[in-house]
Image (cartoon, rainbow, N blue to C red; front, side, top):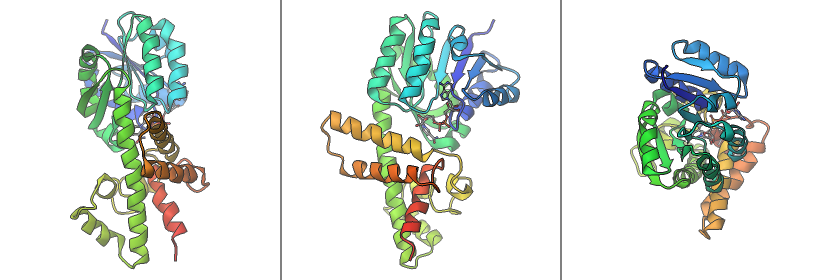
Length: 303
Ligand code: NAD
């Protein structure tokens, strides 16, 4: 029988990641998938009949998988899934947790898994749903070099840049730094476009200028928060899909918590956390992509 891969958590990111994995390993591996939402798992299996099938539970995946991926919303979901599956893990199985969670939870889960004789790396990603679909994600891997090497050929099916950062938890550390910067940047870009609008500048012109000037960033040239500037990003689709504002609020919280643990002063990170907390609670913004911060700010700044 072919070796077995497992994938738990088929959300905005997990679904397209698992789809790339299925597509590129159909000849060599079988793939078992599971999600809380049974309809999503069934839809996935139907779309990849060659290699994928639905497992009745996360535990059933653990009992069969040689390499098992998890892509869950937050630390509490990872805790509950790993607490559930850890007893069932095969000896020498490798777990690859791609969720963005706090360093302490990642290292604790790693201890549970290793105590059972299995292996684990944290491998959070950057790039958004577009990169997940295109298979061009950046992976930040924490774990032993040997385990990172075992994970690498699979991560290469889903991503383009794979960095081994150090021991378990260091992938999450890198990811938290990246997302704190992204969160701050999206607030900054939203402020600039709101100010530009109030000064009478057309957003498309301002964006062309920014993208050939020193204000350019991923938030201006790839994932612009102003509707209609970049096609196919959430901002151009009523902020649907993408990276939920509640998840960004969670990540800013991870950054501020890590900053207080290490006594690192992060003035802008702390301010941006407050912005996302507010936006995530706003009824017109709930459930939307985090770039909805522009809509919220533009409405507040309306002249
Ligand atoms: P999501 O909420 O769209 O997906 C999470 C999936 O996990 C859902 O399908 C949910 O049903 C499933 N799930 C939850 N609990 C479960 C359980 N106990 N057992 C099985 N399935 C369960 O989230 P997402 O946007 O895919 O993000 C996943 C992770 O990736 C988060 O940690 C997020 O911070 C991170 N991330 C997201 C993006 C992005 O652009 N969306 C980018 C980089 C990193």
